[in-house]
Length: 108
Image (cartoon, rainbow, N blue to C red; front, side, top):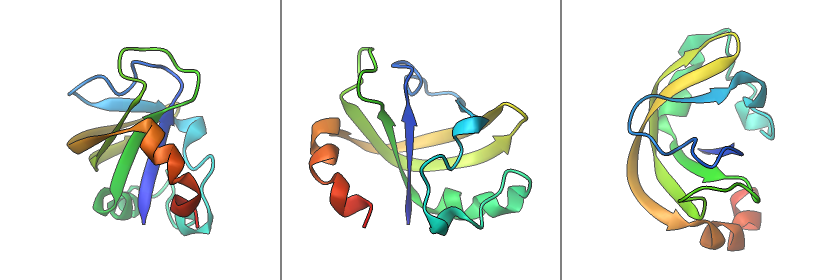
């Protein structure tokens, strides 16, 4: 299992501090594998913290590094009413064009 977090704001992943995402996007395009994860049950976040994570930008986003995908691990997930905060430790980058080439294989 792995997670993909996608942001439309081209600066969303450009920090080394705690990152945030809108809680309305949580599990937005998830399959049944994510059914056990719930914002109401913080203990369910441990599975997300164990999985590899890709941080990407949406097509059409603008910013200095929108073509970069970051591979790493998320930790210290905290769910609020409107946002989810987390820390991210990057292992390495990839080009978004490379990830898009293999996108069909990633979802099957």
